[in-house]
Amino acid sequence: MTASFPIEREDDQSATEIRRVRVTRYVTPLREGGSLPAIVEADDLGTYVLKFRGAGQGTKVLIAELLAGEIGRALGLPIPEIVFAELDPILGRSEPDPEIQELIERSGGLNLAMDYLPGSFGFDALAVKEIDPDLAAAIVWFDAYLTNVDRTVRNTNMLLWHGKIWLIDNGAALFAQYSGPDFPTRAQSRFSQIREHVLLPYAADIRGADERLSARLSPEILSDTVDLIPESWLGDEAYPSTAEERAAYARYLIDRLTGPRAFVEEAIDARSRIV
Image (tube, rainbow, N blue to C red; front, side, top):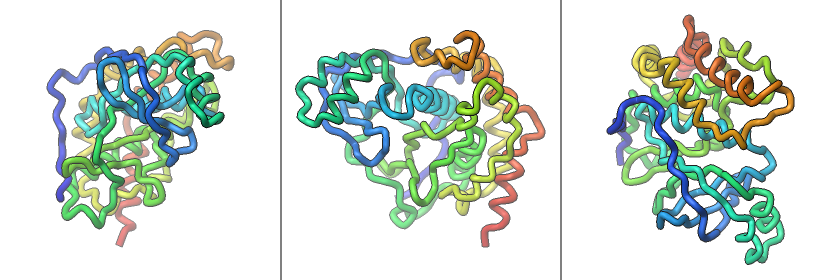
């Protein structure tokens, strides 16, 4: 089994509209994560992994998942399709588990879901005969750029499906957003946590990945991606308005790509220390 790169987008690199679906059936919970995501069916006959807006982490996790997922897809990285999922809280009435019932009732409205990959299994380096070093470098760069504290040996947040690596559960990215309106000032952080990345030992040319991938993320693409955030997911009281809250995300993402990119040097240094 091999894992190759890149997966090319068929459309241009600009952000596109996110499809909307309506959840028609709650199938089963996925108890691996603390937010209790679930497999659901929707009115387009698709099956999805639903992330609830009413989970303990709130909508900021959904924002991180949306932004990271769509930026990753713009880069050609293997990320399942993201959709907005409308959830009627009445679906919770048929659930015997009171915890799940309460979660569904708290999550009425617009949630986020990712395409379900049936038959996939968690990433294990021992199960992959060869990991493409360009793919590994691209994923390391991507997670360093977006400050994703997951993707470690303890929690890889990657699946193997049809012989390829797929990136899931990007909600731990952009942790600076929890620091309030001044979080764009942290855009030049080095992100030392990249040293724990599960793919770092396989990453070949991180500087080459930086040159290739940073060129694909123009300020327009990043601003358009931020514009995808539903208005109902915003409203942090620390911001004077949702417009200023949205602008903070765009500023952070754009400024983080402004050179010199300290997070790239941090990743290169961390890779050099691996024996």
